Amino acid sequence: MDSFNRINKYNILLASASIRRQELLKQLGIKFTIVSPSSEEEIIPENAYREGIAERIAMAKADSFTDLKDNDLLITADTIVWIDDKVLGKPADYADAFQMLKLLSGKEHFVFTGVCLKTSSMIKVFSSETLVKFSELSDEEIRYYIENYKPYDKAGAYGIQEWIGKVAVERIEGSFYNVMGLPVQRLYQELKKMCLEIKN
Image (cartoon, rainbow, N blue to C red; front, side):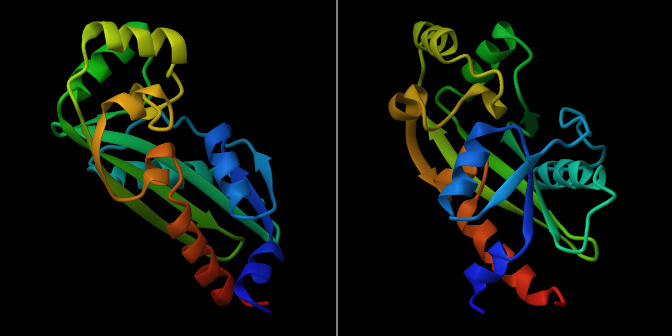
């Protein structure tokens, strides 16, 4: 059995309400069911740094699923933006989104997505890192983006696939899809490895 068919042999569960993550996983050709985690992703773990924050939140989401069946394979993920030694999660409101984008304007920042893969007998955690460089944004441009795209469900208050990605992103080093919220190439490779390791 090849790796692709081996993945689809499992009951893949995606614990994410993110339409972007759902669409990206669907584009891999993987069949999955959407489930809801009970943990609060906004809680920043203590003593965690950079990618460790996203990994720990992804693990916390996975920990809320305690009754996985033998054929279940759970995927959880969390994305953060890291700039000036601090983490940017999802904005609370318009003012919070404005301040986040003002901070990102004209600077480099990192996007980390932590992913947790969990079965009834195994757990794997990994993260992906992408560097993004923004050009300078005027207050008018920031207001236009927030008012028209309402990025309140996005880490760092922006979606790279939207208008702001086209007008503000000068450079990107790493996975574009990681910035969208799911490093699909790395995820696919890790799923293949994990499915080979799981005893049938």
